[in-house]
Amino acid sequence: MNAAANILHKQVQAKPDSVLGLATGGTMLRLYAEFIALCRQKSTTLSKITTFNLDEYVGLASVHPHSYHSYMQEHLFSKTDIDINTTYLPRGDAPDPHQEAASYETLIKNAGGIDIQLLGIGKNGHIGFNEPSSSLASRTRVKTLSVGTIEANRQYFPGDCEFPKMAITMGVGTIMNSRECILVATGADKAEAIAKMVEGPVTASCPASILQFHQNVTVLIDEQASSALQMRAYYQQVHPRGYNND
Ligand code: GLP
Image (cartoon, rainbow, N blue to C red; front, side, top):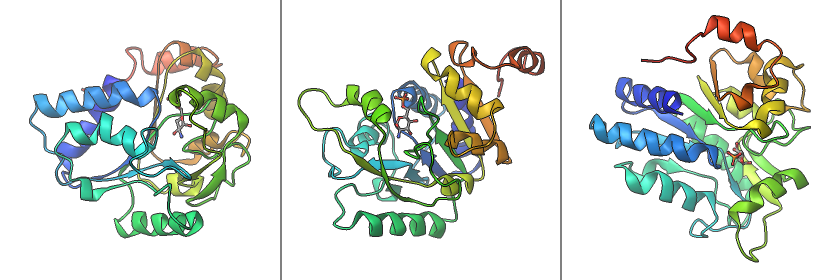
């Protein structure tokens, strides 16, 4: 996690007006905490960056406590000097979600594209909310959430709050257009998805597997998430001390 925070931090140091693609989910919490700590320690300003999040739930207003807007506000934006006017997420409560998705795609393009895109991965191999069978060329659009994804993310919707059935998500093609991707995963329940992504065939059945075609991807995983990789010994031979960006 430290490695991912380091990569982000170095990116902003080298290019203060970077365009960062951001992600949500439990995995990102430690990463954001470490990134914030690094920025404070090194007095790095984030005031010139632009951010685009991967996705948002359809039907949730920005101020909804379980929206990804709220997540970002709570875990990153409010703790830094990021200019809130240059942080973007799709609007979940837009009157026309399809139009909102198309506009979001244009916003990313007009910002000059994404320098570094942060990614987590779903147990079924989704990135953003691109569920298995998503077109590998897809752009930002409305996607129906799978039962498995709803179950995995229900933990973040305590109480009786009804879980959204759809999301606006950057497409697989949108993600592939970013100049660099950092995918982070921890824990045994991500092991199968990681193995399929890294070593399986490139297939819409595991949308993350398209990253095999990306020119600049770093995969940062812990021991447990690496446990199903067939070529684990080889990766350890190549990176005996793990990823070291210092
Ligand atoms: C959601 C998000 C994904 C994220 C995934 C994994 O589905 N849309 O972007 O990668 O959750 O989340 P977690 O880190 O909580 O396992």
